[in-house]
Length: 255
Image (cartoon, rainbow, N blue to C red; front, side):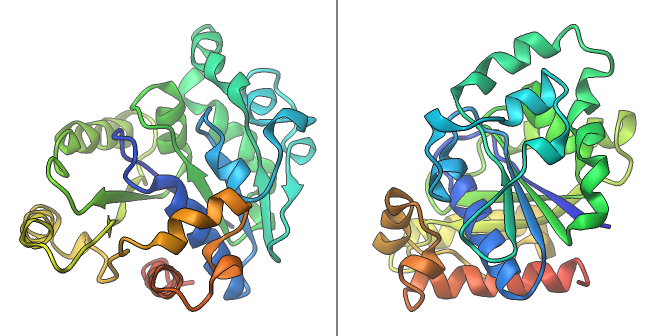
């Protein structure tokens, strides 16, 4: 059965999509079969894998709102062993339309059940909010990865995120928990970054991954070419870091 991971932080610009896309790529390189679900209406993970968002036949919107079978939404990516449930801006209306749905917090969980035995990992890239889409992701997953940028205000809002995860565990999904916290946009040269890392480690303890994702121009460039960092520049610092992160995830999930 697939180990389902949600990449969550209600702050934008912290590296959720970069982490989702490249973690998928390196898990796949370890011969794991991976499905990535783009749950962010901005569709950055979708374009990050080279898909044209305006020409998609079925999307996550159809999966959640129109009750389309997941088999009709999944498309293969150009990365070996990685499939995708793509999305586009239509998903922005899903939160409103799902309000009237029966058991609206677990629509995604029910939707992915038919393919749980077809993948080793399912990675969900969440929107920068704690709304109904993210609650669906938390209800459907076992592990949560929280990307935190190595900058000022990094810990802002994390208490709310932890409270939300605890609420989901009590009411909807008793197995959900934090798999790990990953420091992104890390710059070891600055005193501020060192202070942020210390604060995050004090707050989360051994939940913090040993791998830090550095600030890296090549990482920033790769999505504009519709490529993972492994495809775009496998020798870059960003590529080496995400390969190490994938190894840590494999170890923590004992896969």
